[in-house]
Amino acid sequence: MSIDFILPDIGEGIVECELVEWLVKEGDIIVEDQPIADVMTDKALVQIPAMHSGVIEKLFYKQGEIAKVHAPLFSMIADDASAQTEEKEVSSDAPVEVKVPVVTSEVKQATSTKSSVEPVQEAAKGKAVASPAVRRVARELDINISEVTGSGKKGRVYKDDVVSFEQGGNLVAATTVQVSPTRVEPIRGIKAVMAKAMVESVSTIPHFTYCEEIDMTELISLRKELKEATIVKEMAKQDIKLTMMPFFMKAISLALNEFPVINSQVNEDCTELTYFNDHNIGMAVDSKVGLLVPNVKQVQTKSILDLAADITRLTNDARSGRVQSSDLKGGTITISNIGAIGGTVATPIINKPESAIVALGKLQTLPRFNDKGEVEARSIMQVSWSGDHRVIDGGSIARFCNLWKSFLEKPSNMIVHMS
Image (tube, helix red, strand yellow):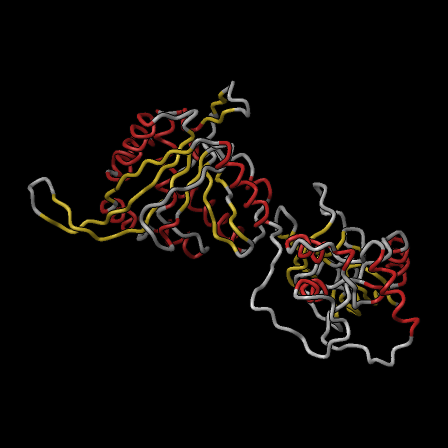
């Protein structure tokens, strides 16, 4: 007996989500708690597990379509009758229209009866039947969706209907599909959140940028030596990598002890400044779902190896899109390692309500004069700080950066301050 799986309440007021990927296919045998699908909210990527064991009968959505909370996500044949009864009771309260029809290039023959055409015409005159994604496409094209004739059941409007309307009228009975040279894609999920956050930051925070170069030669040599240590090799077996990021974070934390204003946040009307004792340092991660900025909590209390473990965990979680919401909250300052991809100098945008962010450029082997006036090859990195000019002045960011730089260029100095 077929039962419907109702998409549960994901929390935080989420009413719809994007179907990112099906982890099963129709006909698959599943067990209780087996992952069924990945869905994207405007907060994070969420994995939906099965509530019962059984066989997948029907998947109601295709990849990229919008699924409604409290509406059927898929149907299945459960192993036991009790599960069937429970699911039927839940599905009886679900909203009526849940399955998003699939758009095809086939059209009905001209011999269709008059009765099959009338519902389409009536739907076009009243409120259009369309998914949120299709409505967003219509808004982006500045089209009144109620004027579009839907080609779906009961007059449902698809994206192709909107595009056809924009190109010169509804071609419901057309026998060929016009390929548009452009593509319209709605911005949603993490990318939508990032877009709003960036606009909010640059429109409310007076940014200024300060650039410096750091000689990383000695730190690179120290890291190479540490990687041969037994404890570091044991960590490597657990896929915990000793990268340069733990040193950057620890050096920032030590410098924040001397310049706490860099770790402060101003309120909305700029009348109060809050200083944070905890150094929760975020790192921008280029994940498959968009830009995520998880942060390592209480960096001031942790060792280099502790930071390496936290950074590895957060990076893996962020790149898979499954970072915990608690890891995304409470940051006080941010590092963007854009140099891992390329580039030397940047103008990073502050992660509001924080007051500062640094962008790390790529490592370059460049000629520099030593103390004897001799030219030698050194490992140089350009760094770019952006600060909130309501809170931080140029002198403060320069002195803070000089101290941070001294810890990185002379790791022995950093070790002394850590003890």
